Image (cartoon, rainbow, N blue to C red; front, side, top):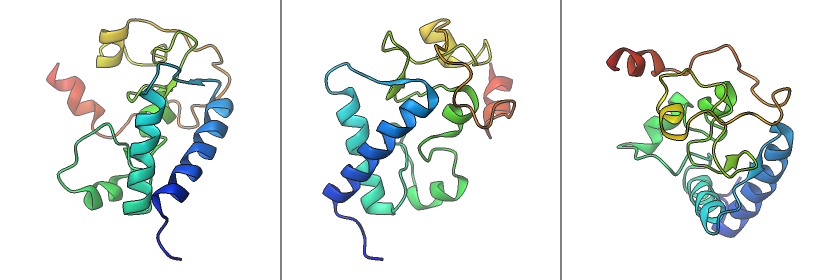
Length: 140
């Protein structure tokens, strides 16, 4: 299969995010520019790497990062805690959902407690822990 053009990748990511936000009971961020920037970064990585690697992180080696899967959209934090650090998938107040995060998580520290409007939706990996989170908590 030939690589996707950026326009094709953008169309795919837009369709995916539209479906995913409804399936998880979230909304796409309505702050001007946020949704477009994140979708543009996901599309760029999809076209370049054939995978929707989160554009909101720095990776010394993007190809090596793909093997971990942690930051492929939807990332581990979204699937476990329903927390989108990119702020693409948010609650009605345009803030990330933090209700399911451990209290010491940086998202809970920064944004406070933001409830999940649809706790029955999303979180296919609830009850799991994201790789690397134990180390992060140990440092705190």
